Image (cartoon, rainbow, N blue to C red; front, top):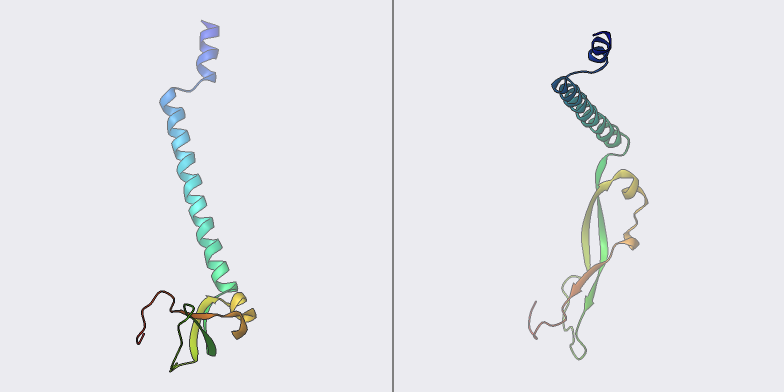
Amino acid sequence: AGVQKDLMRTTQPIPARKNTFMNNLLWFLASLALAFFIWMTSTAQSDPIVERRYTQVPILVELDSGMLLIEQVTRNAQVTIRSSQSITNVLLREDITVRADLRGLPPGTH
């Protein structure tokens, strides 16, 4: 009887262990969600999203061989970039390419 009494002290019933596991899992998931929220908030504050406008960005026109561009109304474009401030601070107008791909289009106004 003494051995059986000691055995009952060291083991928990199966439902109690499952309940403890689920409780720990819920706390873990809640902690993970909170940590993610704090990380996103601190990242957004230290490197905010900003917009910057670049003017006079040249437009590169790509044509099929044998096609001629008779009149190009606009030779430059205005580009607005929305990115984190750390990227916008190092981005130059020369890093931006605007292409007008007219290959495969029939003759006419496009």
